[in-house]
Image (cartoon, rainbow, N blue to C red):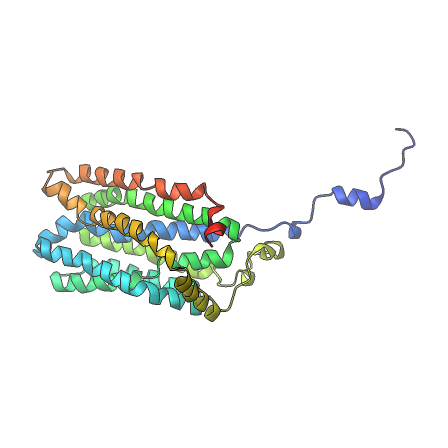
Length: 311
């Protein structure tokens, strides 16, 4: 309109795009990326021995009883050291603890390829399991520090789906490796993956996200305020005591894990020796089994409001 007055200056400023410093950065999502990569790597390092078990048993002259103890040694140590590692993460933060965990298990993944008899293999896999303890709880601790409450459930779903997908392609990956290298060299290659992850994670991650140069003030305002580590531990103990009814969750988890351990330990040997499958066919069967388990974490992606209700 001719002669119209220009809009007041303060109204024009309201329509302008906000400065970049007002918009939250997205550095927190890199924590999910690191957790996804870790979930895949730890599943590879954990499951690869089941695919190589027939070759290991042949080269080290192991019977089924001895190989069963090798599998059980890892599981026993893993269970014993899970809580101490989680407590250590509460005290000193997941940055140092995850560095120790991943370097430890990566070393003993590589060391598995150096073993010469049953006793050495049993000790190595026990120590591998001891170092592996905390590999599940520490990413949770990182999510607690870096993600708002409403984003944690989906992050958990993505991480656990990635772990199952890692389990799905691990049999095929091991099969391809074993076509070109020995099982001893394969363990070396798998162990290097964890070392690379540990170096990158320690360089980028900070226990306090506000101390990271990648987090701006707008994103920092979205993140939870970290509680005192001692208070966190006491709160966790009190919750476990006063909410003992949650122990009903132990039964279905126990049943799921019971059948899972057969598939990530003896299943390839069973297909090879009892069903006379080729190693490649057995790898495909094992991969299909892990793909079917992806449905459980997928459910978590669609239920983000369940966590506040459960506490």
